[in-house]
Image (cartoon, rainbow, N blue to C red; front, side, top):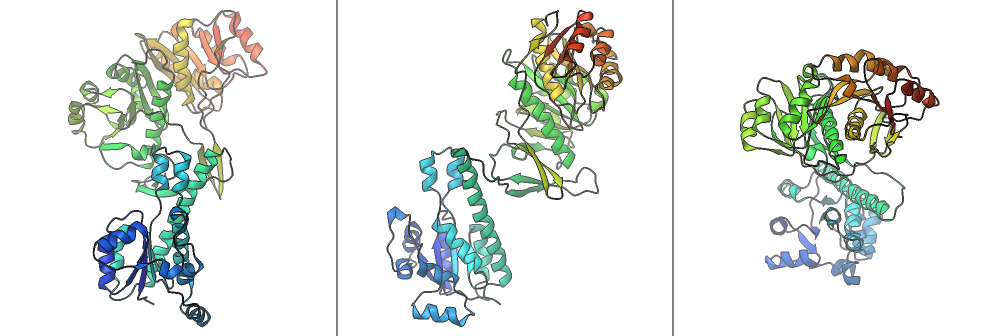
Length: 524
């Protein structure tokens, strides 16, 4: 059944299209009740309003903290028009019914994003607004609630014939979503402010449909957690290319995570540039060099076959030399903080390539939430432990000139699926991944069947200069010995096995050097 409003209450912080709204209501003989600044704007446009005090029979107090919080005001919102008992109460107490509410909220979120102090945040917690919005939304059978200026036009077009039940239901739902998100923002921030951990909130909003899921027959959608800062991949600037798929999003994040970690360990030579090629969530080529093109060529050489159809990411400027290097190569995505105009013009000829510009800010990662299905979730803090403790544990000291290469290798290994082995080497002074084995049930075969064969097939690999890094401890000496037997002299592992001493003695017996990092980097 359609409703025909006779009285509307308006209280807006965001006054977008307010005059147009009030004009239309007045044209349809709907009485307007308004507060403060909203009332002044309407009256200045020549439209009459009725003061809120006529309804509340009370004055505004406490510097505006208490305006609409009155049982007479809420009775006018909540009474059920089809109940005789409610109607009798309204008439006996001479309460004025309210049929429409237009309300939005104090800008708590904007103040939060701006880094406001807690005193300012407190004053931007709306009390009366959410209360009246919820009351009107609860009584959707009789009352219309509107919280978004974008809905004014469609709503006002229904006035001549009455507001439909379908419209009232949709606007009621939107109103409860608004207040739920508003409260979640406040509760989340208060837990941070007061260092308490009570309830976690996720407010997920559809950001964009993806081309498909992991496979073409699967549908997928990118959801944005609106409670988090605007730092995700969805906020990056897509300069060109077709829509991203589910796999593209995962690979692009994996690539950027490597770039970010490479930057975090470059305490020395911060002018160096990192570059990574990722395929199926796995770095197949990584390097750090003096400039973007050099790092790119070395990263590509890490595994040219796997690089086909890969995702490229760098923290350097992507220039025309980089673009021309890709002339006869097929890639899916390239991500960088800056592209030169010449590079963009060249890449525009490769219309299938997605070009994404993403700033370099190293933002704190939130704990990752993984759905197991059936209503269960796993959560863990990010794996941010990198190179905190490097301890030489063998008779032969691990050479200082290999430490930066070891740090580079630890970053690479962190991003490989377990069990993982990375072989890294400096090529013309540039730390480079020359061989990797990952995702294996045992560590020995990650080295012998994958990492070593890949390293040995490259003409620039010198195994005596390679550093071998393991993502977890060696339970037996077999894996380091397999590397030593091929000429590898430098080994890095977390340590922590009950067989650590056996492994150390085996390495000592061959006069090789080994570091313990103290930090495992399993990745499942």
